[in-house]
Length: 275
Image (cartoon, rainbow, N blue to C red):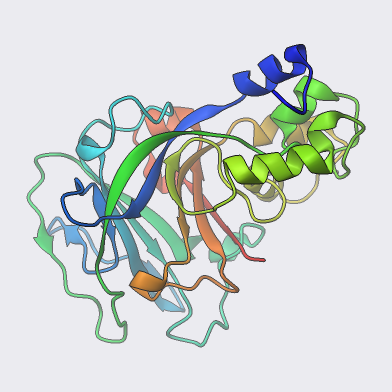
C-alpha cells in the first residue's frame, strides 16, 4: 500500500471484514429489504412500545435469505426477517432521546426477528405515527475498514497508546486517513462488517454503556468489552425515505456473537451518532 510498509499493510488488510452494503434499489436490482412502510408481523407479536413514551417507528425490514451468501461474517440467520424499530421523536418533537448510556431509554430501539415460515400480515402503524415512505433496498458485498483508534487497530499497531488520542503511527497520518476516506468514506446502510462510526467507534460507546460508565478509557476492560460486539445493522439518514437522524446522522444496532447465534435479538444494543 502507498502509505504503509508491506508489513503494516498486511496487518491492516487482515483487519478488514466483509459486510453487506444496502443501497436504494433501481430497475432490475434484486430487492433484499426496505426502509419504511409497514412491517409484516405475526398475529401474536405486539407493536414495540417504549412504556411512558409511546410506540416506536418502523425503520427497516431485511430478508436474511436474500442477502449475499458470501457475507457478512457474523453468523446471521440464513432465512427469516429482521425488523428494526426506533423511537424517532415524532411523538414528542425529539424530547425523549434513546441513548446507549441511559438504560431507561433502551426500550426506545428494538430488533424483532421473524423466523422463516411464520405466518405474518402487514400491520398498520399506531394512529399517532406517520410511517416512512417505502424505499426498497438492494445489496452488494464489500470489504469494510474501521478507524485507526478502534481497539482492534490500536492493538495491532500501538497497543500501549492511550485510548482517546491518535498515536504515532502512519495509520494515524492525515494522508492515510484521507486514503481511508476514499476507500470507505460514506456511512450508508450496512449489515455486518465494521460499523462506519461518525464520531468515536460505536463499539466503545456500547462498551461504556454496558459497563455503566464506570471504566476509564485506559482500562483494558473497556477494549475487551468493545471487542465483544459486532455490527448487526446501521441505517444512515436517507432522503428517499424522509429519514433524518439528528444532523444527518446514523442509527446503529450491535450484538454479541453468542446472542446472535442463539437468535437473542432482544439483547442487541443501540446507539446513534451525528456530525
